[in-house]
Image 1: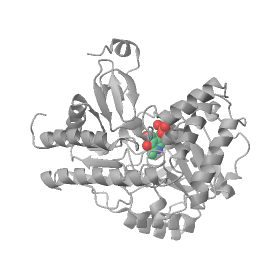
Image 2: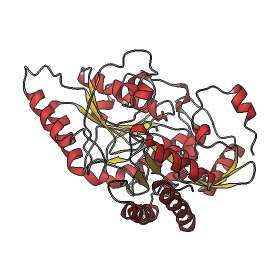
Image 3: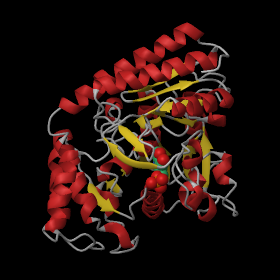
Image 4: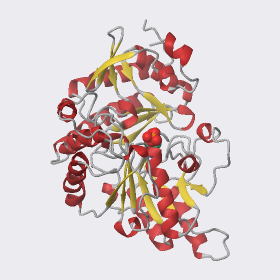
Length: 430
Ligand SMILES: Cc1ncc(COP(=O)(O)O)c(C=O)c1O
C-alpha cells in the first residue's frame, strides 16, 4: 500500500481528488498512470480535461526539453517572447483563420476561473451593465465572480459573502435529463425575451450570457444547437455579450476544435484554459472580439503568470494536432465507440435506471443516484480505472480520456467500466 502519511499529516483538509483516488501516483504515459506500488490505472479523468494529448506527450516533452536546454524564457509576465509569438501565430493560423474567426487573444492568470473573471469584467465594462445571466448546473470556477456564476451549493456556500450580480436560468439541454424538473431552457428564453421587451417587467437587461455548450461538471448536459442559436439571438437583441466557457470541452474534446462550432454561433468572448497549455502546463486565454477588446486599458486586468514560456511551447505543439482533421476524426470515431458502449449499458439496465449523455470524447452515464456513482468510481479505481463523478448529488459518472488514447486502452477501460457498472446497478458486489 502506498504511504500517504505525509499528505494526511501536513496537507490541508481541502484536498479532494486524492480522497477519491487514495494512492500515490509516480509516473504516467498517455492514458495510463502508475502508482508507487507499480499498479497501472487507465486514466478516463485526464486531469479534469487538461490532458487532451495524454500524460508526457512525447512531442511536447521533446520541445520542452529543447526549450529548457536552449535557455528559453520560462517566465516573462506579459513581455514579448519568441515562444509566445510562435504560440500566437500557430493559434491564428491553425484555429482562427481556417474558421474565419476574428478575435484578439487575451492572456490572463493561467486558470480557468481567471479567464471567466476577466470576461465578466470586460462584458460589464463594454455594456455598462451589472447583471450576468448564467445557467442551471453551470460550473465556471471558484473565485468570487465566477463562483457567482457557478451553481453548485457546496461550492457557493464556501464563499462567505453574498454572490451577487448574477441570475440563473434553465439550461437548454438537447434531451430531458433523468429526473429533471427544471423545465426546458427554450421556454425560459422566451420568457426572458418577453420580460426584457416589457419596460415594467422589473428585469434589467444583462451585461452578458455566460454558457457552456456542454456542461461538464454540471453532469455532461449537452445544449441543443437550436437553444444556443436562440441564446445568441437574444443576446444580440438586448445588447448583451455572449460568452462561451469552453474551458473543459474546447480544444478538440467534442470532435470539433470548439464545442459550439456545430451550432454555428459566433460568441463575443470564448474562455479557454485546461487543454490549451498542452502538457498540463498552465495557460488560460480569452478570445475577444476586437470591438470589445478595445475597451480594456493596458494592464487593467493583470496577473503575474501571463507569460508561461513552458505552456506556450507545449501548447504550440498541441496545435500541430489540429493542422488537419486526423485527430478530430479519431475523436469522433472513439466518441462513437464510447457512446455505443454506454448505450449498451443503458439497454441492459433500462432508461429509468440510467441515461447516457455526451458528445465526442466527453461521455457520461447518469446513474440516477449519488451512491451508485460513488460506488462505480470507487470500484473502478480498485479495478485500475480512473473516472469521476459530477452533476447534481454527484450521480453522473463522466468519462474524459485523453484524445490520444490508444484504441486498445480505450476498449480495456470501457470493459472495466461496463463490468463495474453492471455489478453496481444490479446490486452485486464487484
Ligand atoms: C467549464 C469550466 N469553467 C471553468 C473552470 C475553472 O477552471 P480552473 O479550475 O482552472 O479555475 C472549470 C474547471 O473545471 C470548468 O470546467
